[in-house]
Image 1 (cartoon, rainbow, N blue to C red):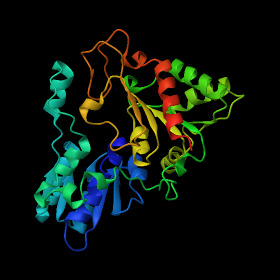
Image 2 (cartoon, helix red, strand yellow):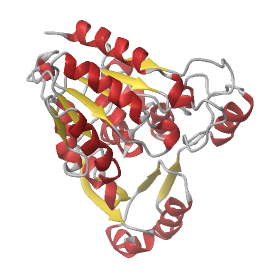
Image 3 (cartoon, helix red, strand yellow):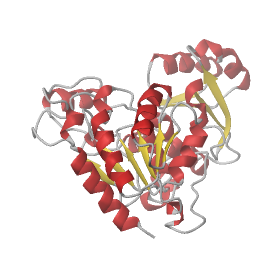
Image 4 (cartoon, rainbow, N blue to C red):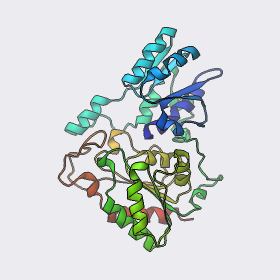
Length: 331
């Protein structure tokens, strides 16, 4: 989901860079369609469940001038080869895979802080400068979601609910905030009388139910496995604060300009997948020591340390960061 959200600036750039009437179609997996459907600038969303063969014939019937490949994997390769029959020009992102491997294995940083969104926008270089077309970096405005942020035109209006949103899940254990950390965080929030929303998918539903039962005297709502993506985006957008790991929720929070505390584990923002243009009060926490040997992996699926990386961001540090952000953003 996060990867899909990160492509939204490219949609805006295509409309800004190409002359005449521009029709942008978006192909993604069915599970991620909610992050695209209704997104301004997207004419049609195409979805697959397993293979691109499900939509190949229909795409050939439409006929496209360009294919912008922001995934650069085997599936997107099949689509490019099929559409080349119709003289479609394809442009493919440079994933910097070798540079990521060098960073993970040897600590050699050749990425130099370049964000994946910048790499996505560079894919459009045959059309010119995407950032210039968008009016410069300050006007790119960050990410976009099909759910509008409830700001009502004022910088702090999204804080109206005063609720703290906790994103429990992660794609891999190396990105997940440990359960006993969530307990400590909820103990602190409920002691303060703070209202809390728990978000995540079906996998996190059991943990969320356990936490709700532990803090039944507090205002803790469980949305895990129940809320749709659009409903989850709405919960995030109304929050006073989002606490999340390296997850799709983090990118949704950046898109909605919600203040965040981002807790990193086995991955690192040095890989270029951190929050893109987040709320200025956002705090990012990385594991304490050892100084080297991070990130452990590109995906967060492996940890090279005896004390796992997510454990090395203590709940006390997270709570202190939360309090700092809430004081800064209080209406």
